[in-house]
Length: 613
Image: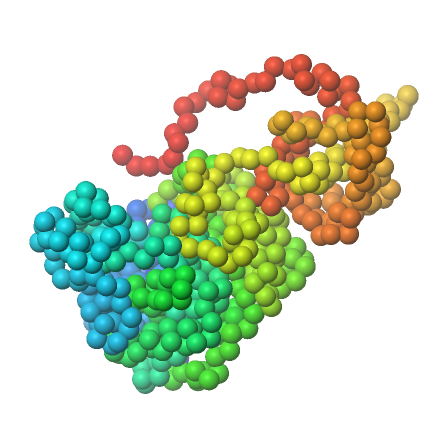
């Protein structure tokens, strides 16, 4: 076994690899760019080595600098994580030439699967189900039109060296092929330096399902069930789960065996993923193979109990797999949400800045199941414009899909981030969406259900009453605390009236408050003071806490809390409201106040997204 390994990556995946290595008693070396000097992965590693300026092209992507770091620190092997150099055949070859072990598959397998055209040919040869299409070179637009007509519309024009949705176009007719072919070639050339594209049948209303495989250097290959990654935005995965709500045992076995057959055909070793596009009728076709660890690997680890990073290291060191196919059992259900620094209310534009508040949810925030968070930041960390905006991943694991979703929703309500925009309200809204809960999803889910993008929307009456009750309860407790401040001038005391009005946007609620210790009773009343509804809230919340945790009529509830003038900003279940808590007289006066336009008060021009000219 290796004594020391270097992680050629950054952020949450670097931290994730370091944790497994430490568990195995292996020393770790982190590499970092100038802007990552104080990053968490640098702090967690035993050693750290600077590899240059902030741009990845001058640091994390420079093979020579990684090898130099290995030689300087005595690292015997390199784990590439994902992204950056993880699927670069030249990187694995350069390491081998330098006498350093690459913790990943052999270069033959990387080369065979790295080219999408060649990988599809290999899949067809291994009797893996493939999408009807043309995998050869396409000379020009005229040839593309002929192929598209033969395959039958709709078709997908896709970059051979592509990934991440770049160099991809869907065409439903001849005109769209003519436009899409040249655009796809141009985008492929600029993104990957390779303008080759291929054309295949586009499966409508498809699902994205992938099989995790694990192979050693002794010819043993197993599959570890599947992951459903259909919740995507612009071909980028957002929410993943394992297993898939679509598959039955027979289809799972068939897909798994085909994935293993492909892996055997290219002599695959290490962890890898065979991706399929699936129809709603459980038909499936080979999409591509990723010769690396996937971002969404934690959901597989949670339902199988297999540490994929640990096994990648063991396999690279020459160890045999001790896990047989018959040993693989899928236990329960896991859901993963990717937490991104982006603004869902502004077309998911990237957001940068300092995490002025960063509080992870805790195990106590979910009533059932297990909570896991893989991240690479802490309070005070900087989100840079140079790298991927993913902050981390949150995984919940429970006995059933319904329980895993409920746990994920509860944990999202207790995840507190400020200083940058983030996608937690959007993720929370998906968890509460009836179609997502039903499992009847596809890769067009976000486009179908949020056609105009994700927008602010007022909560329904029942949810508003709950949020208003929380706002009133914490406001009442804060007022009581202020009344007990020592050193106050003596004289006539002041008692807050029990009648309040909670206002949020166009919604308002008349209530009466009765508080006794940690229990608060909120009575919703009409204008005449007649009681319409009563709620009992119990919570240990204290002024300064950023999450309200407690029960409402015996049911667990939580909400993110941020003080604002005359009230509280609350986030829960995908809703983000500003709840102002007034006395009856204050509410009357508030209606007369002119509304200020925030845009008029700004003294700076705000750029809609970070960028580099």
